Length: 271
Ligand SMILES: NC(=O)c1ccc[n+]([C@@H]2O[C@H](COP(=O)([O-])OP(=O)(O)OC[C@H]3O[C@@H](n4cnc5c(N)ncnc54)[C@H](OP(=O)(O)O)[C@@H]3O)[C@@H](O)[C@H]2O)c1
Figure 1 (cartoon, protein in one colour):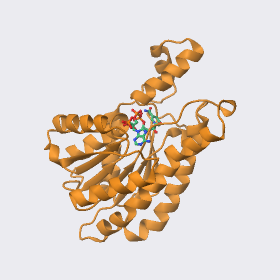
Figure 2 (tube, rainbow, N blue to C red):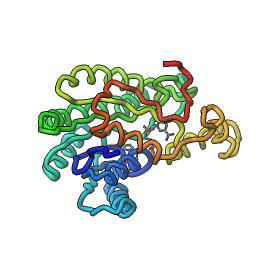
Figure 3 (cartoon, rainbow, N blue to C red):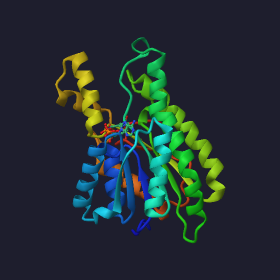
């Protein structure tokens, strides 16, 4: 299937590792030019080099940028830099790290604010600054304008001891659905991807927290997670990235306002 991603321009946040990095690599493999950011200049530059090698693409098709997505000024600068460098913007993937695990008695008001800044406000600000450019892209002949947001299955079914994530992700879902209705008439689609347990650095951190609490081995923690999924295993970053590429594609033109779990069948709701 031709996804129609050749020479499209993407901005992928939180891309030095894990889901964001895999998404940036998949979009590059599909022929897009990709700006990718994380907080660390070194980590994101290394990721861009590795992606170019793995995907077999010219390193000039990747633009690594240092940007902390909790800082609106840095977002504005990174989006402007992308548009100046590549000449426009077709695809925005919002993403960042996850907040610490814990429940109501573990956090003070600043912890809650930090989680909202990291996962909700970053998403809103990335969209606000990308939108003028996405509107231009949508208005072009054969235009393509996509907003994709990485949230979590915890938005559909809260995960015990992940209160900060459960709360901030639900806010993103409300924002995404509102935005999909508002920018739909302009031809911009807005969808969220809800990863289930997928093998990344973030997952290792979560496993270590559980290991410290329960004394289980890493394998036992992973086996518990796998058991709750219809497919009885946890996911890979490539499987997540394939869903990103499809929702970013020309072929997904009639899909908007959707919250897509990429979770091996963890969420058990009928709808
Ligand atoms: N993996 C899973 O099983 C899973 C499941 C459900 C939800 N999620 C969520 O999906 C998102 C990505 O998870 P992941 O597993 O890919 O995590 P990860 O491997 O820890 O990667 C997180 C990425 O975000 C970057 N980052 C963190 N804070 C940032 C900030 N303030 N500004 C810019 N970049 C930032 C990190 O790079 P630097 O450190 O270089 O900045 C890194 O590239 C997280 O929100 C996570 O909670 C993951």
